[in-house]
Amino acid sequence: MIPDNYETFEATLDQTAPPKEWPEALQSLWFDANGDWESSHNIAQDLHSTMGSWIHAYLHRKEGDEWNARYWYDRAGKPFPNYSLEEELKVLVEANL
Image 1 (cartoon, helix red, strand yellow):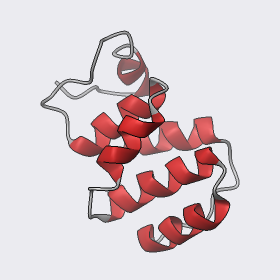
Image 2 (cartoon, rainbow, N blue to C red):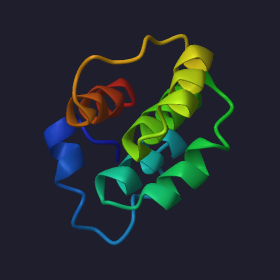
Image 3 (cartoon, rainbow, N blue to C red):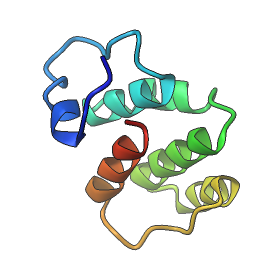
Image 4 (tube, rainbow, N blue to C red):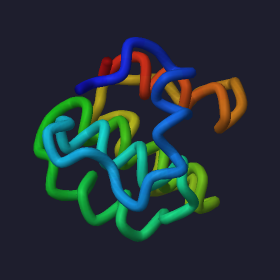
């Protein structure tokens, strides 16, 4: 079952993995929220969509690779954010609910 809101999403972070029935974009964000950047990135880089590009951009921003992040924000049609990574994660999760 897909969470109703960000708080419900956060409540799943004590599980060992995201639910398999979740869309891949939401699974990617779950891994990131759980501190597994690599698993999150592995999913995001295979999502050939605007959302996949946005998640990919966020992950490279988090990594500190601003040049690569800007490339992916451009691909997603999104401006480089002027808010925190924590806020962007919440915005991304909510966009996938």
